[in-house]
Image (cartoon, rainbow, N blue to C red; front, side, top):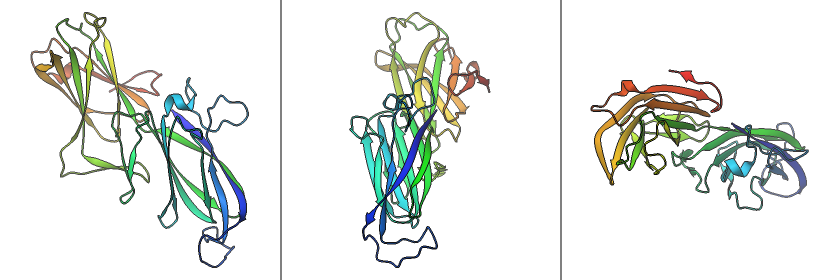
Amino acid sequence: MKIVIPTTLLALGVLTLFSCKKDHKSPTQTDDKLYTLNFSTKPKLTTMQSKLAVNSTDTALTKNVKYLTYLLYDSQGNLKKQVNQDSASANFGTFTTQVPNGTFYAYFLGNSTIYGASVRLSDNIIYRDSRLDMFYKADTVVVNGSNVNGNVTMNRISSLLELNIEDAIPNVISGISITDFVPAGVLLLKDTTYATINSSPDYGYLHSYLFTNAQKGTHNVKIRMAVFVPQVLHTITLNIIENGRYIGHTITIKNVRFMANAKTILSGTVFDKAINNQGDFHISIEPGWDTINVNL
């Protein structure tokens, strides 16, 4: 899934921002003019210019992204602008900044809830809830005294885990907990590289699910949760819940691989296990979420 953001830069009048000499030979040199750097976004299905869109059946921006963060840095690594928007904002998806001539680096983060990613600027690190669906794009913009038009495409960088419980849900069982363990590390803003921290224990992200009365007694109940950091192997653990407490053995499934913008499916029986047996689970990846499975 991709999100498209066209960019436009419009010339404004003469204002003073930096105290430096004019030099028209290089676009990286600043002068005393400011220009409007405008990132404008709208749903894909609008006629004429589609500013921001998700390349899927559902093309409405606000149905996929509820929170946007825009960051703009100059060529020296100085933060020039940071804007956070939620989908209730009147100008959701539109970002405007006045900048002089020069090279700038823009970053866009989109999340599936109004609780967006936080950014630790001192280390250029993205912090986020692992369970959120997330989109990202970095772009370089050169301002050189004239209008600039272009498109920025935000790509989904999260994955989806689907647990398919093949055996029937017993009536006495309340629910199941799924914990996603990932090697400790940090996500770098500049390129979403995941830098692991070998001296720290794995991070664990817990998702608890309570079965409905309609699901009890049925087979192939599916539970989904967003998963982040597809660059590394994950360990998934399952625990059965009865009357608010864990019962039986913890089921541990190691070396589970994920892909950005793809669904990893774990299929197997859960309630018939006298021992922890990872071999009973079949693991597959569905690229694009709506295409054929790739068996692992």
